[in-house]
Image: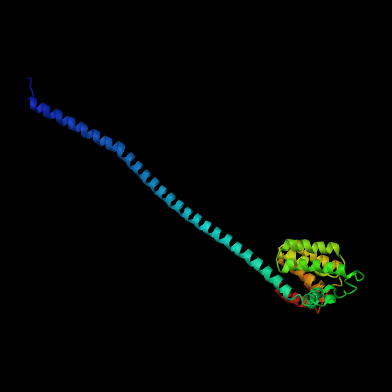
Length: 271
């Protein structure tokens, strides 16, 4: 016996089968792709967080770079101020030297000052210099005109240093004087101020050399204790404290009553 289904029922069953197939496919697709999709989103979230962290770090680096540039600018400004302070210190140092130029260790400068203050109508005083000690000068037999030339050269070099602060020209002038009058009346003082001029230029090695020249070549000069002190002081400035100590101690031993020895004793306390 053959049974037949109604056309409507067959259509319903076919539609139901199609829906089930679709549902099954959806389930399979969800099972296949949903975990992968979640993993991708998770990775994207991690990547986004890393990018955000890198961005924040980059901002911090930029901020630190800006601060570093500001600090470098401040350091350069402080260096400039320090150089200015050093220059002012050297200026004050030379000023003090000039003001103390009439102490017993600078007899030649005292003689120059006395002559500069002499009355204009006193021709003899204006054109002649006091005779130099035999231990300092070997030109006692020279004519007054040649002595005056030496005096003029010395005064010119001294003014270049103390009044005009033209250090290089002062160096050239003192060197010319020493070349022309190596045993002249003002040779020891010229040698001393030559060292001072190099010191004012912060050329410490040249200053040290010139002060040592004074000690070696003009042993009887009253400027020797001052030159020895300057030798020790330059060693101290250069950071060689042991040499500075030895020089100061030697100065105190050989010239105990000099102002330079008292200064050396004060420096020893700070070494």
